[in-house]
Image 1: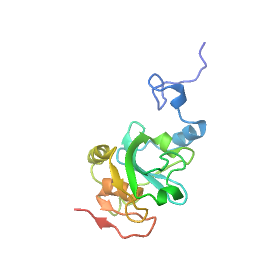
Image 2: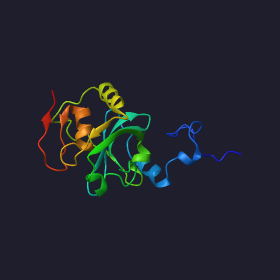
Image 3: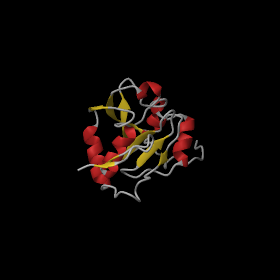
Image 4: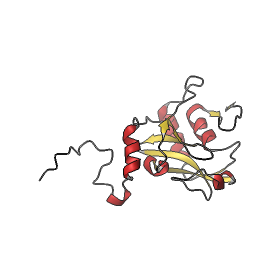
Length: 167
């Protein structure tokens, strides 16, 4: 018996994903409201005390910088993360990273800096997955990380630091 619902246009291929790994209804709601990110887009995730940033690499995945001992999903980038001095680059599903926080695509510096080609952004991001990097909330945070990947510019607006164009 058919339920009358058209399930052919879902974001997830239900044959490959276990029921328990599907996002919560609230997360799914946020994902439906957002436009589908494009390769290399900057993803802004509101968190306290700092905004968390990731870069979209396709098929529902993002690459982001997670401070050591930090929580990569909901609740990440909190006070405990602010005191970390090491971070790992992770590739995770966007829905897992945002948790209940929501997100928006925010390529806010496209009018100031020319973005690198999306294929190059994704390639560089994927190369860094699994690497441990230095982390500083003031000079080497997740926003610096994604801006370097998209623009080749070391910058974070959260703390008012001046950008540095990388060679």
